[in-house]
Amino acid sequence: MKSSLLHALLAFLARPVQFLLYLVSGWVPRRDDLWVFGSWGGERFADNSAAFYAFCQERLAGRVQLVWISHRPEVVAELRARGWEAHGWWSPRGMARCLRAHLHLFDCFAKDTNFWLSRGAGKVNLWSGVPLKKFEREIDNPSNRYHRLFHGSAPERLLYSILMPWHVERPDLIIATSRETADITRRSFAVPDEAVVVTGFPRNDRLRAEAVGDLGPGAGAAPVRAAVAAGKRAFLYLPTFRDSARPFLDVDWARLDACMASLDAVFFLKFHPVDATRYQGNHPNIVQLFQDTDVYDVLPLTSALVSDFSSVIFDYLLLGRPIVAYTPDLDEFISKSRSLNFHPEEIAVGPVCRTFD
Image (tube, rainbow, N blue to C red):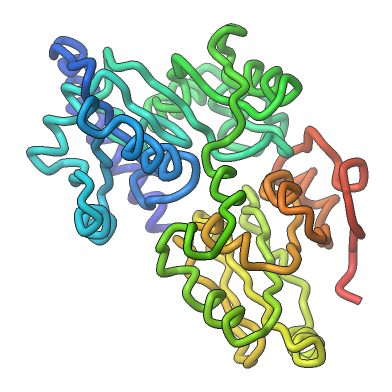
């Protein structure tokens, strides 16, 4: 708690300089043939941004300069090893690319590339999920900081807009997976109809890869690949994050481990990138994947998915494999985190489990 408060205070103190930089960035001429990409606040190479970046490398390289922006040196190094251009947020070349880029493409918000150098660029939001949960302007929980940003008192709205200006800025274009989800997205971002385009998600093209070799080389998927290569079935548990930060795990790990042994299977779990939850057990048939693992390298290798309020269930439907909804804290999630656009029991294609038994 103390570290998050300190981080917020430092961010607030830095804002005058950063907003001045944002203002100046709008006066820099931008190049039509330069696009910058980012993902998850600059933390990862993953999700729709990564999938579309790779697609553009195949189709547009040589005609458009395609640049990945991250503040993690290991991400930059990984992409450079593939022969792709990547730079750090505040490196001289990274700043130059962000200032001159005609398009900033991201899967959350403009802070994925570099918000402070983005004024005047076209903002393309590839987004990060089908809106199973309410998000942005439609969050109706008064204790949620995003609700306070858009619907709180005047001082609250001012404070949060200073701390999170990328949430207030509307994208020029955002993609959706259907007309229904496009309507939800339009309301949540308060953009006109023409700003939301139904395209499907780039990341889901990877689920149609016909062989493991067609998938991305993500190192995070290595344990799953090894298990499958050894002839074991892979089960994957992907819980979403809780805005409330309350504990939600209700699992008898020993019983689960024994169940996996009887099925000649391995139970993999990966927590949401912003979730602080950790698996503390030590069981041979239960493996926690790194949080920055791109699950779209993993999903095609698995036999079944266990999830709760994560929109990954919609993507997994494309594989035609079993999906179990495990929602032991359903009521608390709705009351303490956020409401749902779609109730698990209304959309379930498999069992909805409220208890571990």
